[in-house]
Amino acid sequence: MSTDRHHHRPSMPGAQAFEAIEGDADPAALSEAADRAAHALVRGARTQADEALVDRVVHLADSEGLETLAELWSGAAADSLAGALWRLYLLRSWVYADPRTAAAEFDRGRAHVPVAEVISGVVEPPGPDEVRALVDEVLSGVVVGEFADTLFRAAAFARVAAAGRVHDVPLVAPEGGSSYAADVSASRLITLADQLQHAARLELSGALA
Image 1 (cartoon, rainbow, N blue to C red):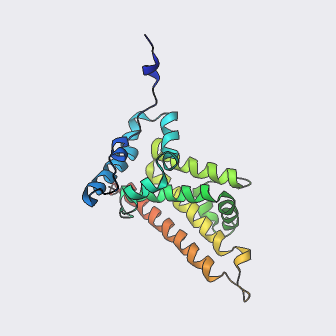
Image 2: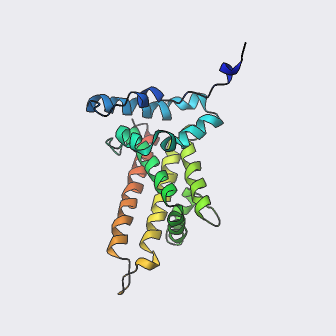
Image 3: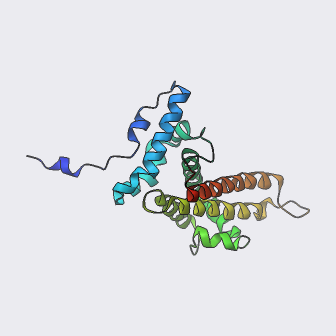
């Protein structure tokens, strides 16, 4: 008798919630599925954390598709578990979509936000491969680390990158200072950083649900 069944791929926490998503899903049912999936990933994974599970959680946006995660979590409040997860995956997806820009912005930002750099992690030199590895390491904290630390590190990374975006030399206006486009896009990263940091504080107090 074959023993293959004893070596199956670990079940993904919250998998049933993902499989239940339909294009015309009821908003209330979708919100409930979002909460269940978020709690399964963050709270449930602790009891079955292993290398394969960490890899699957980190690459969830790759396997499920960012559109699926958006449908599930993008409408969740920023101060909720589901909303915090969405922002973590959104940050990772941005880095993977344009790792060279992310690396350049992170590198420039470190000179302007040195304290946050300590929290976000130091990679030297911070090239495309290094920033991808950094966001993957941060996201792995959903399974193997303290979730508050994961949120704090992600917030710090976003804040450093925002500082680097503001100081992007090609976007500097003739009269000095950053361009309007750089300021607007950087402000979005700062908002993301603020939301992640707030969620981290809620997690520390036991109020993130």
